[in-house]
Length: 256
Image (spheres, one colour):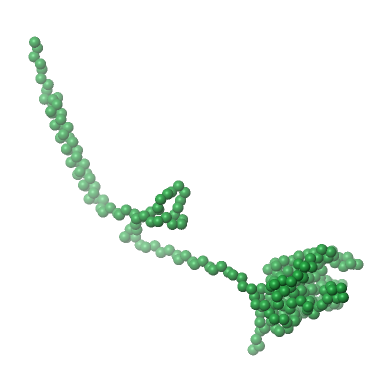
């Protein structure tokens, strides 16, 4: 019977186990030294940022949960931001003070160059509003049975578009624009200031009497002249009407 041969010492199980244990200890000690060395070089860690509540403007599509902001660095200079201006209060329209009765004396429309005296007008036998004399084209008229300038209700002033001698006092009335100013002076020295709302043209057979002459709670003004096409036998076929409302009053200037 042959004799069993013994294994070399470096291939025995006890040697392999001991070698593994030694290598494990060496690797653990080396890793601890590396961690310790890096910790000394990094300094003190900054504190974690504190969360803040989500405010208007923080939310973004696809992001949920509270937004966070990093803590400021102690060495950083505080930044100054421009103060947000306070919102301006909304403008509220205040109705102008109405005026007591006083006769109209003059009308001024700066946009079309009107600055004319006003004469008193009434109704004829057929209850139609009369007009200033044709031989006085520079003169406008005020319906005296209606409200005076600045009184509540619908006040009416009329004037010719033209005469045989040329353009008359309201020749440019159709060129007036919305938002323009009309001033009517009174016998007591006060002035009623109106602002134009609209300029309309109507044929005489479709003239809206109620819309033009109807009663209004606030002080309003109508300026009326001729319009449409002209025929030598029948005159103009329509009328131009300016709609305006009171937006201010002026007291008479004090004498020095």
